[in-house]
Length: 352
Length: 276
Ligand SMILES: Nc1ncnc2c1ncn2[C@@H]1O[C@H](COP(=O)(O)OP(=O)(O)O)[C@@H](O)[C@H]1O
Ligand SMILES: [Mg+2]
Image (cartoon, rainbow over all chains, first blue to last red; front, side):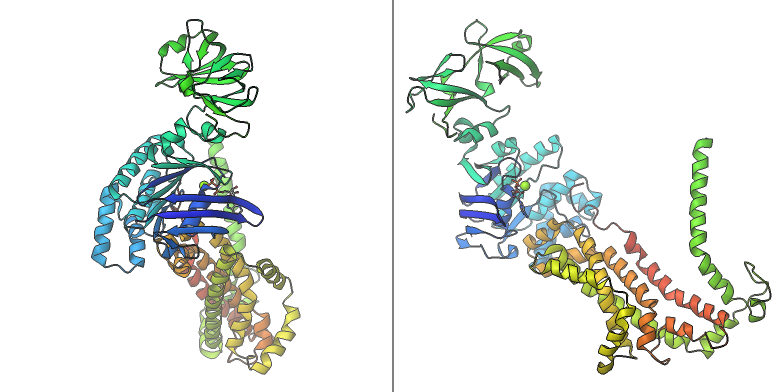
C-alpha cells in the first residue's frame, strides 16, 4: 500500500488538451472516487497513473517515487477494466494467477493466494472455466479477483460496474466497500455514477472538462458544492437553479419574491446570483404561503415522489417522501428554508 | 408447409450447384489420372472411363523426378509460409498497435509493391540473385516468395490484431508483463486463427507459384512441382495421364495442411474477453 501524489498533471493528444493541470494528494489506504460526465478525462487520469498513457507534463509519485517514466509492470498497481479484459484463452484460475506467475512466485504460494481471492469472491466453483463460459457478473468478479490476488501499491478501477445490471451493481458496490474495509488498500475508482461515488468514497474528486472542480468528502460535495457544476452533478434529482439578484441579506427572484438568506454574503445590492436548492430540501406549503408553482408531472418512485413543477415559467423539481403529494392539485405552494440555500456568483463559484 | 420446404430445397440445390461447379476441375483431374492411355482419346467425352488404372501414379512415382519436385515444393512452401508468418505477425502487430512516424509511408510502400505485375520484376530479380548464387536454389525461391508475400500477409495479420481488444495487453502489462511477453503470452495465442489463415494463404501461394520458379530455376534438382508438371509436356505430346496423376498427388499436402489448420480458422478465440 502506498500514497499517491499527482502534481500539475497535464495530458494532450496532439493539439487537443484533455487534462489541464490536475493536483491530487492521495493518502495511504484512502478510497478516492473520480466522478464526472463522460469525456471529462477520468479514464485518462487513471491510465496515466497506471502508466498506460504518457504524461505530457507534471508529475506522478507513488509511495514518494516519481513514476512518470516507469513501465506499468514496474509500478506495482492493479487495475480493473470496464471491459474486464479477461484473458480468453486462460481459465479463471490462470487469469487470476497470471500476475503471480509473471513474478515467478512459488507454485503453492500462488495456489493459496488464488484460493483465498476466489473464496472471498465466491469464485471457487468457477476456477476451471474459461471467461466465455461465465456470466457478466461472474466475469466482473474474476476481474476483481485478478486484482486482489497480489498486494499491489494501489488498486485502480475504471467504471468496473457499468456493464452490470442495477441489482448486481448494488451488490458489487457493497462488496467493494467491504473489501476495501478488509484490505485497506489505496484505491482510485472512476465512475460517472454518483451513487457509487457517494457510497464508496473517502473523498470524491469531481472533474469536468479536464479540470478538477472540487475535492472533498461525499457530504462536503453534497452540502457545500464549490460551483454550479458540482452542485448540479451531485445529487439526484439534480439541484434546482434560479436566477436572482442580491438585495440586502435576501435574494430577489425573477417574479420579485424575496428569499431570505441564512448568512449575509459580501455582495453589493443588485448583483446577479444563481440560487440553488435541492429538490429534497424544498418545503411544500399547503397553507397558501410560499410561491405558487404549477404541477406538470408527478413521478412516484416508490420510496418518494418527484414533482415536476413550473416556477415562474422555469422547470423546477421537488422530491418528497410525503404521499400526500400524489394528490396535489394543479398548483402548490413552495418554500425555501434558508439553511438549505446555495448561492453562486456570475463566475459560477459558490458564494454561500 | 410447402412454403418452408421449397426455399430449403432451392437453397440446397444452389449450394450443390456451386460445389459441383467448384469441384468439377478436380474431378476431371482425378478422372484423367486414372484413365488408361488407350482410352483417353478413344472413348469420347464421358464422366468416368470404362476401365481405370493406377499406372500413371506408379510411373510418376518410380520413373519421373516427381518425388524431387514434391520434396522441393514442400521445403519451399513450408519455409516461405513460416518465414512470412513470423515477419507478418511482428510487422502486423506494429502497424496495429504502435504509432510511429513513417507508418503511413511504410503502408503506402507496401501497397505499392502489390501493384506491379510480377512479370516486370523477373529480370531485375534474376539480376540481383544471380551474382549472389541464389538462382537455381531453393533458398533464392524462399527469399523471393517471402518478399512478395510479406506485405499482404502483414495487412492480413494487422486486421487480426486489430480485432483483439487493446485492454488485454494493457491488463497483462499491469499484471507485470513486458510488451513482448504480453504479445507472446496473451496476443499471439489469440491470433492463432489469423496465423493459421496466413500460413495457409502463403503456403498455397508458394506451393503453386510458377513464374519465378520457372525463371529462376533450371534443371530438375531444384525445380518445384509446378515447374515439374511442365516436364510432362514434351515437344510432340502432352502426357495427360501422368501430369494429372502428379497433380492429384500435389494436392495432397495442401489439403492436409488445411485440414491441420482449419480448426483454428473457424475458432472464435477471443470470445469472453470483454463484457458481453
Ligand atoms: N487516444 C486519444 N486521442 C485523442 N483524444 C483522446 C484519446 N483518448 C481520449 N481522448 C479524449 O480525451 C477526453 C477524455 O477521455 P476519457 O479520459 O476517456 O474520458 P472519461 O473516462 O472521463 O469518459 C475525451 O474527450 C476523449 O475524446
Ligand atoms: Mg472512461
